[in-house]
Image: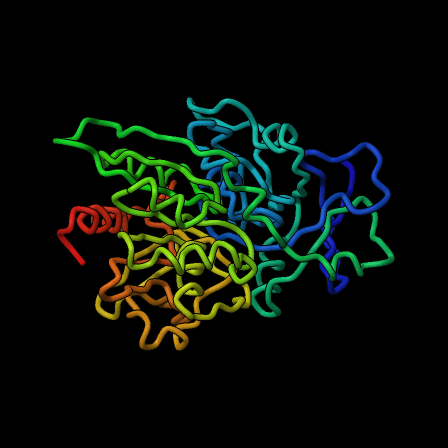
Length: 362
């Protein structure tokens, strides 16, 4: 098999074998991205199709990936990853639902990857030194300046829907169904399913929809989705939320949580290596839940004093995982209560949102 390389911005090189889409001849960089690791033992399809990974090279810490193949019904969106890194790629999946191999999935979407890499060593390196940029290439380049200069920028516009879309409730409700406006910063499909399965109608909106347009829809509530990149660069989106908080019930997830905090006067910062995987513990101080997460930024808890109440924090590093805004009918969380493939410990938050829309909870 051919030898290819994963090169870190600090010059460290890891050799492996190509998987996915590689050009026949490529003298330079096959791809550039921010190298991040995710600790999920399952759910690689949901990971690869999560728009929040736009511009990043995803590394799976679990040693074998692809063993249950490719299942289109499990996709959470389109694949926007810059690259893919695994220890071992299964060439012959075994699953009655499978429709192909993960290698073919990557080839069809133009995503280059590498296998045979010591992902354990790489993960320890990132945990100790922090997240860093990387490139995939056929030969070790002499100039790493483009790798060091790379940044994930302006990705929300790339992954958001370009037009308004409507989703009907899965089952009839007693009376008119609750209508949720969902701002798409990179929304995972299971956010929509989590709402429609509870009898809600959902209107999916582009990320740059103005506050006045949202209010003109007269929705019962507003959902803020997950998404990629640095929250602080989304100035227009933050300004629209500033005009919306307090006007209608709001529930935010991940990037939506961060943008809402910025809109209310808070601050965000970049984590050393982020939280990515399906085994992240969050607590309210009394009870702990296991959650799925995928983010490299967090809300600065101290910046929210006097603005919001800290509802959840990370049990490992005590970073902000949830905020309640008293008197404004608004709450947000950093983790994913809609997580597919799971866990589903915090799915009750969607029920809280429904109660808020019905006026049963402030």
